[in-house]
Amino acid sequence: MSSSTDADEKKKESFNAEAASLLVNNLRATFASGTTRSYEWRASQLKALIKLCDAHEQQIIDALYSDLAKPPLETVAYEIAMFKNSCKAALKELKRWMTSEKVKTSIATFPSTAEIVSEPLGVVLVISAWNYPFLLSLEPVIGAIAAGNALVLKPSEIAPATSSLLAKLLGEYLDNSCTRVVEGAVDETSALLQQKWDKIFYTGNGRVGRIVMAAAAKHLTPVVLELGGKSPVVVDSNIDLKVATRRIIAGKWGCNNGQACVSPDYIITTKDYAPKLVDSLKAELEKFYGKNPLESKDLSRIVNSNHFGRLTKFLDDEKVSGKIVFGGEKDESKLRISPTILLDIPRNSLIMREEIFGPLLPIITVDKLEESFDVINSGTKPLAAYLFTTNNKLKEQFVMNISAGGLVVNDTALHLAVNTLPFGGVGESGVGAYHGKFSFDAFSHKKAVLYRSFLGDAPVRYPPYTNIKMRLLKALVGGGLLGIIRALFGLS
Ligand code: NAD
Image 1 (cartoon, rainbow, N blue to C red):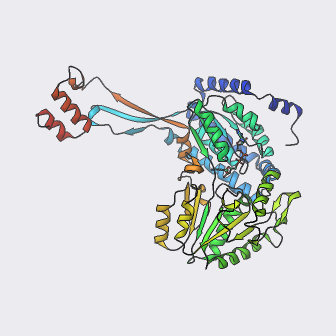
Image 2: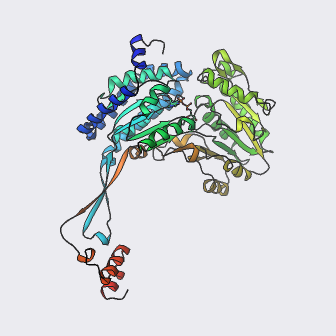
Image 3: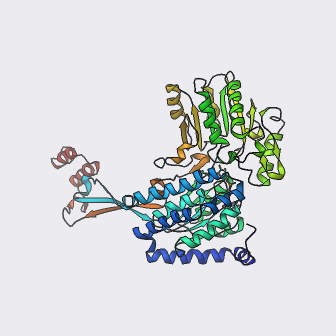
């Protein structure tokens, strides 16, 4: 942000591996003191995060407007309200999540009891992305705090206003001996990645995901990688077209103008149905964003000129340049690109080989809708996949045959608002998951604890080993009472 002072700049410049090491050591000392383990500390931090949202809603809206021209409604609903909702759900469930889970034991350990104890991992690193810079920074922080960890958050430098606001507000609202924000870009992130963490939670693209995983591997640090991919939408012909169209638009252009990890990346429909779908998309897009969408206040801008150039390259590819059936307008000075639909583009075009992450929506046509499964499965596993149909058999086949981070039938993007569902990718779209209890679990170690008394000290496990002991142990480990009786009578 332009308001950062020289002192701030110096502080940022001096954040090298040495400073990162010192920071981690300090956090380790606080973690070791036990501060973060109590229910009271965890709850107080979650409550402070809710307060932060309530007291600074306008500043958050302004920061996201400065970074992305994000419409205030999208900021309030999809970043602040969703985040507060997650905090409240965590607060409501926290005691239950922290309670150890009693589990059954086997006859081989009789008499005994056992439980699974969730313990904090220690000191964790959260690295977040620019597109939902508030939500994606703080949603993992809920899990890290709820699970009782100390943490460092590294927001994205590509959303500088939000990054600096987060640094300021987290400094004011959270316990700084346990939670710290480090601002910066590649150098600062690299300095952080050289350190030993107990978990690294990264949101962003797969190229950097690989850098994060390689750095983590040096210390055997576990990772969650929340990545992206090409999320398809399969559209059948037996649907309520108007509702489907509006829901596709809401998930694509209504989510940060397509700059969302779960945005529909491309549509697959039949050759026969495509013209109807295109007409419907055109009509609804015009209703939503007017005749000159470049001027619409309800569409985010492209985040920066690099991403603007990346998206322009997709459109300049000679394989697709004649395929635009709607939109295609650009204003580089304002970093605006209008909602753009491309029809019947070849699958080997650039736009079909990379994640789009912007307001361009290609449509691929097939003879029969069933062919869409092969189209999807011929690529890497997407973060989300969507199907619009009323055909139950097709729904079933879709769920059985499509491997993606998450699926939604007859809507887009909404699965991430359901806290009881895990949110994460598979294969190229990510490793691990979070949201709700899954966030708590992502930042916890599930410790196995077995309790024995001094009773039941069976000589069978001690030398000298004999055939009868071997038979008995085999039966005991096998777990069947009948087997044990047979072994005792020499029958097995
Ligand atoms: P980005 O450029 O903000 O990068 C993400 C983070 O990586 C930043 O904090 C950045 O500082 C850091 N980084 C960048 N280069 C680095 C390097 N060389 N070494 C170490 N750290 C580095 O965000 P992005 O990658 O452009 O984000 C967009 C991608 O993220 C898309 O692929 C999108 O699908 C994905 N995404 C996924 C989710 C999800 O929840 N699964 C959410 C949002 C975005």
